[in-house]
Image (cartoon, rainbow over all chains, first blue to last red; front, side, top):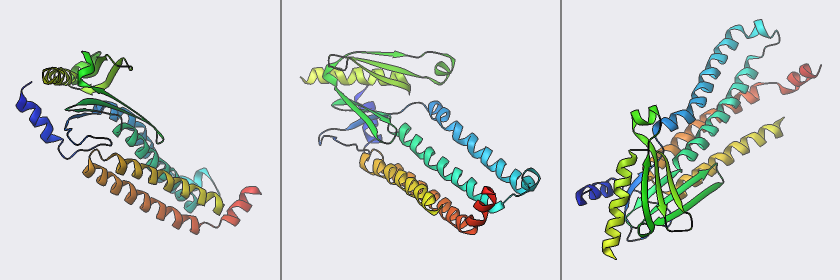
Length: 187
Length: 69
């Protein structure tokens, strides 16, 4: 990986920021899980929304056939309640997905894991403590779409950092190895 | 009924405020965060206003009396 490539990464994330970012630190890479994982998580919401729309039209047309005391306003009210709950749950899931993130900076790797709205685990690893980087692409779809796992073996307490289902794991491995080499040369 | 409904609205607003807080405090990608906050609040406000409108259209006393009988 050349110096120019690293500079390109830096430029891409120059407007990005995160809590506890050091003043002399630049973000090089922000990685989330592959879009297929995103799709898998959001599919239930899409199905539920389609179901809600179908139920709405069926009830408006045949409500009186199914329920003699059918109240159209009550049906719409209840559909809206379900719609609001779905809307909020969708955004909670999105936050969960969006904040499950790995940030590679010029100094370290930050692993942020969001669990629901009230739990967040943050761990970090300095490049100097990286011992070994391994990638794993396992299965038909991951091979086809090029996503998989990146394992970073560390000398620290945590033992191993795992990037789960990330796109282009080989590129990430090369980048981390390059940054570790640079850190070693700097010392 | 009104109390139950108010509880629901407070829970929804609480969750929205919490998500907004996360997005604003994390600051990873400010433009995307702003977009998602706008989308989330505008959608939620439209749905909540419609919901409140239908809540007041329903005669709950008659409905509950019918249901209990």
